[in-house]
Image (cartoon, rainbow, N blue to C red; front, side, top):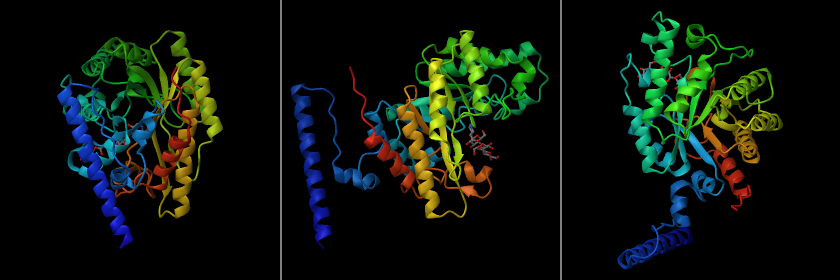
Length: 377
Ligand code: G3I
């Protein structure tokens, strides 16, 4: 009884606040005074939106942090709750699949930007930044490309045309591009791909130079998995990007994908050391595709282990001088690549399949709340 009275009182107070704000904004407009009106949500509104407290995006604003997620364009189109959670919690988006070569260029030199444009429009409507993913990869390449017998020059022309068309279209609207994705095999050698076979190892630096020509402002990244800690793969990535820097190739950072397991936490000191050595080369380090998969069926312990991993990786990023981007590979377990690829694994994201915030979500909120806000000089 008392609780419902309290809720009614809070609702009335909120309505009063809204009306008050409306009157103040109208008065400002009439008098032609003041800057753009700012709507302040009261605590009840936030509670109704998410449970309680500020959202990830609201907290990230105070941290100069991009907190982002990969977007499934089908879900974006048909699922209202998906759109709402996305808009509330993230200030950066990337396309889970719709900026890959097979989607953007399904036929030779015939581009289809319809889905990528929808993402750009959603981002613009919600004042979100966009990461581009990905220009050069051995997967998500269409049959017309894989099945032809290209000469080196022809394949170079295909790649140059793709990169310049795509990057040029979104020039000035993409904060960072994953230019080359997963070019290094797990043993540290260059991965045997259509690009390496057809062009040779130089395809990597060519791709960065073409992307830079098409959008000189975008940050250009090398992106990979399994090289988050100090190990053979991250050593190979380090050697590659160091050699690119030495040749003045326009590369600005390394994406650490961070697809990990709840029962095998990455070592935060090692991730920090890896970020730091990249920083010494003048490169950014970004967490670009984080998810933490759990062996099914799960237990409550798994959820808290998962939360600890999300928390420690965000903390590691915030503590590094060269990490300002933390991206999860989706946000709701309703749409995750994990169960389809790893049989017997799932629940890898920060909202459950009914959009309820999981301990992992709350752990990220806690990190952002407790991390000191950077001072501006
Ligand atoms: O949309 C089509 C559908 O029309 C068709 O009927 C169906 C038949 O197979 O395929 C659907 O496309 C699938 C797409 O995901 C959307 O669900 C592709 O087959 C499937 O290969 C694709 O998988 C994606 C994978 O990259 C390969 O592109 C995953 O969703 C995506 O999460 C995954 O993301 C990668 C990053 O790009 C790079 N790092 C690793 C990460 C996880 O593998």
